[in-house]
Structures are given as structure tokens and as C-alpha cells.
Length: 196
Image 1 (cartoon, rainbow, N blue to C red):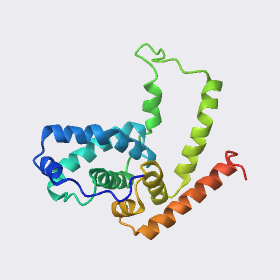
Image 2: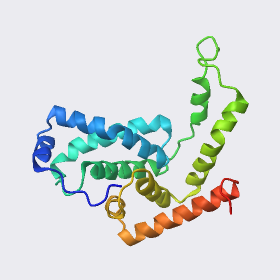
Image 3: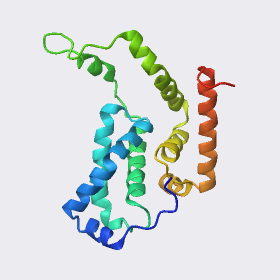
Image 4: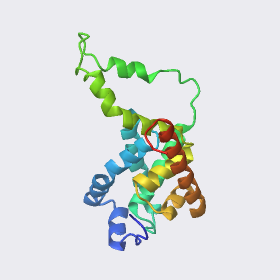
């Protein structure tokens, strides 16, 4: 687990602030997949997660002069990601487009033939049941609990790091994490995935 990490090396910080291309490329290579996974885990749809991650890196570049290196680069990036996702969660008036239409149409080519044949439905159901149960239970969590669970459990950040990202006390992060775990266990139990 990533606990008690030291501040960023001053030489590395200087290269970041100079916007050294090789150093910036290493940041993208090192953190891109993790940010995408975190965005998905925090409820961002797959088709939007890449755009959000790109926005995170753009904001990171724009805010490098304010980055003091007291936290790790990953913590700074996850904080930016969290704020970007909060912005996207705000309802936008007049957004009546149903994205399922785009998903459906993307399955066919210009001749109305399958782009890729779907797998056998029985096989697909067996392989997806557990993942769907977990996904449903995560989606049922209040957003702040889901975010805390993603950052603590999946991203393996400490309570202090998560508290800094979300602007909450370490004790409150602990309470939210505990409640998220209890709710997930109860939800999975109701779906038959956890024995009493």
C-alpha cells in the first residue's frame, strides 16, 4: 500500500516545472491507465473516461507552477480527476440525447452487418454475472462513498491522501470507507454473492 510517501524529489519537480518533454511523457505513461481506471471506478462512462483523463493532464500542465511537491504526482492527478468528475456530475439542462442509441448503431457497419458478432448470450451471462453484481452495488453507493472506496481500495491511497483529495478529514474518510464496505457486503449478500 502507498502510505507515508515522501515529497517529490526537488530535481524531478524542477523538470516538471520546466515542462521537460521526457519527464511529462513519463507522467502520462506512468499515470494514464491508473487515472482511466479510477475514472471508470468513480462512475465515469467508458466513452467519456479517456476525455476526462486527457482533461486531467491538460489541467496538470496548466497548474504545474502551483504544484509544490508536498504530495506525490499521483495524488495531485487524482485530485484533479476528482474535481473533473464532480463537474461532469452536475446536471446539464436540455441533455435529452440517449447514448444507448450511439452504442447500438456502432455495432453495425454501413451495410447493416455486425461489426463484430456478439458472443453467445449464455457464455456472456456467466462471465458477467459477478462483475455486474459488483458494478450494480458500487453504483448504488452514494457518490462520495463510491469515490472513497475507489481511491482507498482500488488505488490504494492512504486515508490522509484521500482526505486531501476530497477535502475531508481522515476520520470522515475512515467512516465513509467503512460504510461503503458494509453497504457493498450487504448489497452483494442480497444478490447471493456473499454468504451470511
